[in-house]
Structure formats: structure tokens, C-alpha cells
Length: 122
Image (cartoon, rainbow, N blue to C red; front, side, top):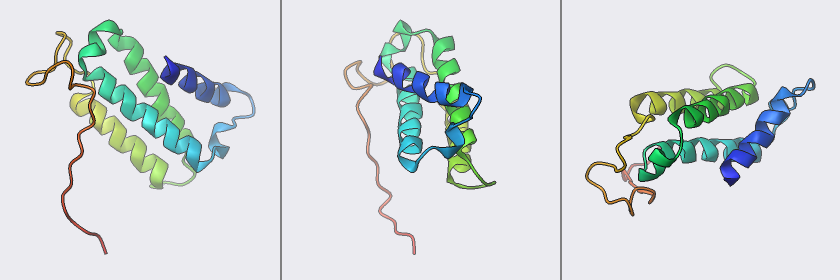
């Protein structure tokens, strides 16, 4: 799984004595956030029965910790994103464990759903 390989590299940056993760670029932050959302999507898909929930939870927790390590000030973008991801996990991150998502076919569980509020911020 390439997601796990990427996250292992990221976690290795933080485990070093140098602590390189706080100096990560914005691109690395975006990839870590994408990995966190992929873990959320995986945990709520029909494929979740093939992966141990404890393993997904451990990866997600380490991912949140990595995002918080990148944060340089209170209430900056990485810290807010870490809080949002943690809240999303608490609200539904454990996912159904019975082999299918209610109301959806197993083919559609990993499809992205785009919603637009048709609003603008000034």
C-alpha cells in the first residue's frame, strides 16, 4: 500500500533526533492531509473489513500527530486542519464493519462525492 509507505517515510522524519517534520514544506503538509482523508475514506468503505481497524486508527493518530508537529503557531492552518480531521474521525471515522456501507453499493463506496454550497467568501 503506497499510502502506508508514504506515511512511514513521514513518521521517520519525526522520529529522527533532528526532528525534520516541523520544517516540512507546504506540499508535504498537503500530501499528509490527503493521506489522512484517504484513511478516513478507507475506514468507511466496504474495504474496511479487509484491514484491521486498529491499524487504520494507529496510522490516523500518527498522521494527526505529524500535522500538529508541522504547526508553528497556535490556531494556524495545520493545527486547525488537525482538529477538523480529529473531529471527523470521532464523528464517523470508525466506519461500518459489516462489509458494506448502508445505502450504497460496494462499487461506489470509494467514489469521491463533490458537493457545493454555491457560496462565496469576501
